[in-house]
Structures are given as structure tokens and as C-alpha cells.
Length: 543
Image (tube, rainbow, N blue to C red; front, side, top):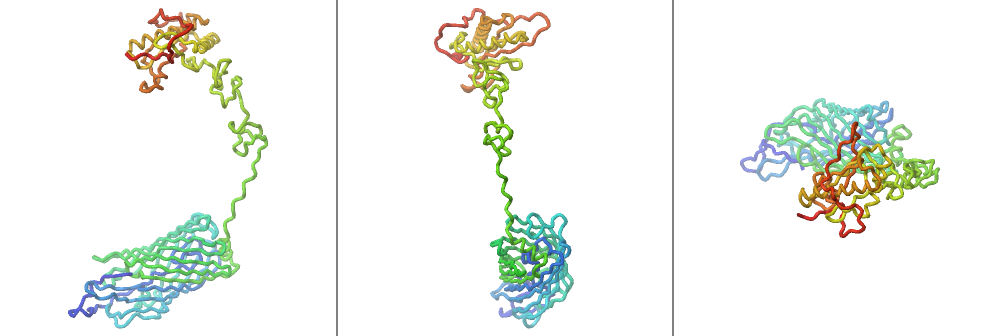
């Protein structure tokens, strides 16, 4: 319920009457200003203008309870309903122009209204019952690039302008007494399922007045509305909206006026060209001209077979479903169809995107399964990779060289790997010299690890020479734990750090430089017949 605390209303000495006040300048309390197009959301406009030369006309009936009620300040007096109820008829008509604009007229007529005695605001008797309101001219122009058809989806926008002429009875709170105007902007979006969301905003130029200490003047109207199809084929939709205005004038010591209403309703777009809308709602109870309850109904008629009638009939039709996709084709018969088949004219497995398997290195292992597709695996290789191969400045081995625990004795399981290293060197005479590097993890002391790595590197060098590699083409050097590949805090990291690497040294222009000194020139023979406990690349004891 609306309330207004009036500082000029004071209790008389006996506490039974209110002191009379001087008459105040009155204003139009009617905030229900409907939009007359059939697809407008009662008080919230949508962006689409009427179709070219299509007309729409009909009545809007609205009833409001307590649109203007005063609450005396102090004491126990009851509220005073200056306008306790109002039944209003808005006769509306409009026409569309060029599918881009529409212009309309709204003639408000207060059919009946009543209230208590107006003596508290300086006039004897109650408010006049049957009076005219301010004649209103409305206009709408679509924004280029955002003009959406009735059945279309997407964004829409339009500019609006309302101009009201002082034809109403100001003393009956039915007119402003002056010309007022209100430009605005409409932005909305319609989804493919027919749901419409609309947002209105603008400026309302009104005369500046003070009514019992409350400043009334220019306002910023706003509105948010939605339309949701319930039975789209039958043209039945649900409406919901919030409409109001923010007062730009404010008297000292008073609250800003923000009259607003929440309304819901139902609508039926009948095939006869008549659109029926009815509903109701409540005001916020926080301002003048915001009624306690509101009810409305409208009957908007559009001549049948006009372009606007056809547009509304198209809106009622559900959107056409997208055409079904063409049947999948598989010309090569490999069960990989459509865009998923990268080779539609050649059969191939699904794992290879429908393309035939290839074997670039010719080792019998297809490339999609070959871990080394550019290097033939040979007779000893695994998973398409040779046990040893040339890559950059390294001879890369498939598995680590393994030694007996805490010794430089090479385990027999690593002989095939070293034999493959020798083969790679012998088949690539451009490898001037290969450095066998020994590396350990971080367990034990630096001196211990350095000595062990030297001895093991020397053992591998001897193995390669005995396998047929020229002695002056291979050197050995131990690095201990100085060049880790991974963190020595985990078993996995230490296993990576215990390794033998084969680095191809660049050729020299002159005589080959001497090999790095081998710390253990008397290491054990690299081909033992048997060994005790075993370790991967040498696990050293803790110091």
C-alpha cells in the first residue's frame, strides 16, 4: 500500500480532526499507460513495429485500488484515500508504416473513481468520478540492423516517443495540466522457442509540482517484461513484467518517489485477428501513484488477412526443425564415415582415422604402433625401435646397460644392446669418435661414485673394442653423480640418473686428441660367464 507522511497534516487540539491546508497543485496519478500493439507486453513495449499499413485498435480496461492514499503523521488517525479506486478505459489505435515505424493514439477515460473527502488538501467533497485523461500520441521506430520479424529470433531495438496533451481533469488527478513528453529506448531478445525478454528505459518530462511537501516532476520510466509461449500453436502465452519510474525531483527531508508495479497475465492470439489479454498485480507500496492492487484486460483487434495478421499467424507456428543430416557415406567401406575419415577413398582402420597404415622404416611395424617410425627395429628391436640408433650427437639405446651390484661387470642381458651400439658405429664411419659416459645417482660419496662411473664406462669401452670397434674411435669417462637427469629423492629419479650414454664427438681437423684419462684401467673383463647379485646400471651402497 502506498503511503505518504504529510508534515502539513497535524492533529487538532481535541485530537479528532485534521487542520485544513491550502489546496496543492494536483497531478495525474495514473501510472498505467498501456502499449496498444498486439505483441507489446501491456506496459512494456517490444521492439517490432506493426507491419506496413496494418492497423490495430481496441480498448484497455484497468482497475486500481488505492492509487493515492495519505497517512497522517503521528496519532492514531486512519489512512485517507483521496483516490480509493479507479476504473479507466484507454481507447487505443495505431498503424504501421513501412515495416519500420508505427504511430498510435491513446484516449484515456476515467469511467469511475471514488475516494474520501478532499478537505484535508483544501477542497470540499470527493474526487470527481467521470472525467477525461490526457490524450497521448505514441510512436516507435526500429533501430537499423535490429529490426526483427514477428516470428524471428534474436536481438531487436527501437526508439519510442510518447507525447501527452493536457485534455485531462487535473483537479480529479487525471491530467498534468501541461504538455508532457517521454522519449525512450526498447531493447529485447526473442529466443527460437518464442520466449521474449524486453527492457524499456527513458525520460519523462513532467511539470514540477509539490504535493503536500512531496516534490513531483521529471522521472525516468523503466520496464522489464517477458512473454513465454504456453500453447504456441494455439496462440496462448504468459506475461510477466515490472514497470515503474524513478523520480528525479526530491524535496528536502522526503523520500524519492519510485512508483512501481509487478503484473502477470495471460494472452491469446486468436486466429480471428483479436488478441485478448488479462491479468493483474500489485504495487510496491512505497510511493505516490503506486496502487495496492491492479487488474487489467484488453481486446486488440487486427483486420484479418492483413500483413500484421499474417505475421502473428507465423509467430504461432512452431519453428521448423532443422533438416536431418544426410545419411552417412562410406565409399571405401572401412566403417569410418563422414568427416572422421581422413582418407575417404582408401580403406584404413579407425585408429588411423580411416587411412591405410604406413611403415616408413619398413620394419614390419605400422607407424601408428611404431615407437620409432623412422628407424627400423631390426631383428633384435622391440615395439618398432632398434636396440641402438643414431640420433643427433647421441647413440640412443632402448634400455640401460646393467652391471653387477657395486661392480663394473656388465651383465649378459646387456650384451645385445652393446653389440647394437657397435653395429651402429661400424655402419657409420663418419662417427669420428664416441665418448662412453658413466653416470651414477647420489647415493654414496662423490669419490666413490666417480670411481665407479669411470670403471663402468671403461668396461663398456672394452666391450665395444672387443666387438669390433676400432680402439681409437671410442673413449670412456666417468662423471659420477655430477650430471643428474632427474631428482635423486625418488627411486624412479635415481634409476634415470644411473646410466651409460654414448656421445658422438665432432671430428677434428688434425690428429685425434687423446681420450680422457680412465681412472680404472684395470677394470674387470666385461663378459663374465656368471655374476652374483645384479643391479640396473649399478646401485651403490650407502657410505
